[in-house]
Image (cartoon, rainbow, N blue to C red; front, side, top):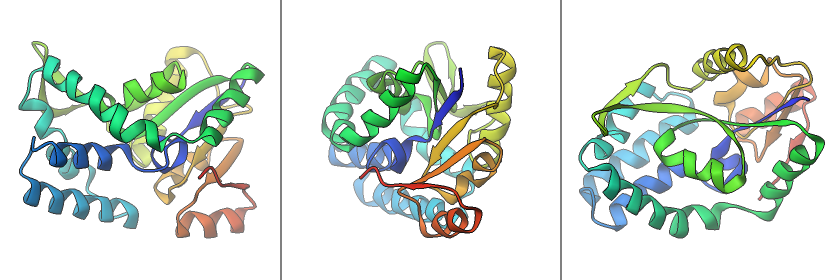
Length: 217
């Protein structure tokens, strides 16, 4: 049974769940619209360019979670799923997951986006395993800090290695689907790397290394 690993944003989703969560907060007047939008766009551009300081970004992105109780956040998330996430899920993305499920592969989503945002999305796909950046919780509330290593760039590799050891799995026969050059460290260690809707840098790297390129949009 092989491991089928999927990036989430711009791979299984036709868009970015973290960026869309920021848009949801702005549109529903949960955060200061002008300031938050400016910062949200700035950090998204840095991510695309590969220059993002992940800890700086997470201090920004996790702040709203710390400002509200979990029941309120969960209610907002249900609205966010309906208005933002479900429209980003294509039949092609669902079919890719189902192809690996039918083969009996172990399904895993790995994403830099935090688990509050992404755990319900993984459930929507029926993917039982998720590695995501973990927001710190204390007494049932988020603190605005990060617990452990963010699953970003080399951090994805570190978190995956921990997961493999915990679950008694290996990368033999493994697949990884991603859109981003930020995932080159992980794409480089699986048996079957696949560039999905790739950015320009990943497109060039995939051509150079002979990796398949898949369009799910």
